[in-house]
Length: 118
Length: 245
Image 1: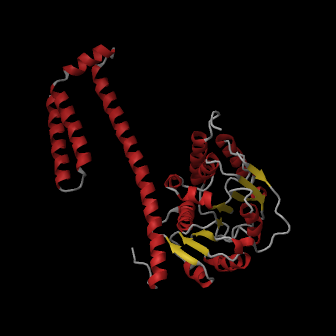
Image 2: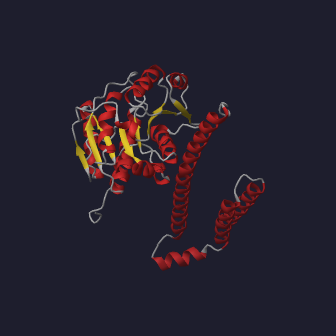
Image 3: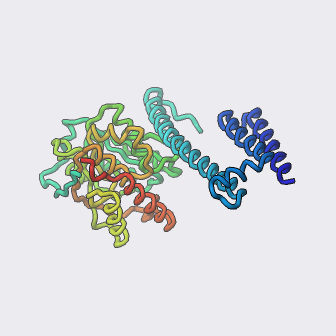
């Protein structure tokens, strides 16, 4: 039953991601990565014995915890990558705001016009 | 690190500025009460343009600064004091200015000290001068500075002073994209200058209390704690390693 539930959940989530990409709510580069992750987890849901074999090989006595641990590691990695991207965007945003301010000041001095409202 | 404490030269006056190309940069947020008098005093002390970088003020700061003859550069999104200062530095770099003076717009810094800070930089004795007023700090602030010095390895006494003079080399460095990563003008910026081999000198100046008495940056203990945590970690990870000359 749990196998069926996790597979159905995975497929539904994959369909949601594809919908978000279609409606431009999610950039394709993110959508593709998430879709692959969800499809992979759905497929693993059909073959739980893979985790049993891997867990045994790693010396993990309770196999499901391996899946949970891997999922947490993947989420932490994803969150860290997001923060790295946000850091880069912050710098770009700051320099863009500075450049706009300088250009507006120069334009105002040349044309005598007030800056454009936000 | 080349950080030295010096007493101001008693023979300074308003100034050697005529021989060099420069500007005074004032990052400002809601300083309507003091900015007009401040800009006028600066223009009396040094014959360089005064650039007020408006960090999205909601009061009459811009009008007051314009009235006093400042050039106003208005940000479309608030960037904080360092982001605003860097805006001015980028303009200075694009105009190939020889020197800039950065000052707080809240009336704490005395324009009469500008000449003393400019003299050693114009003479080529150093690249950066910090107007230092360590006596202004409370016990807690002095303790905070000490922690910052320990974690960062910097030897400056006044790590948070915004009253500085920079030469063209320092302007170019601090206008660059890597300097846009910093939120504040203190440890990160000073470490960047130090590790680029800039000669930094401190000169004692007088600082008065803020005209409106309230810090923009440290408006609550939570913000102070966040600032200290960030600054100490930044200083630790960016400090010069023993094998770096």
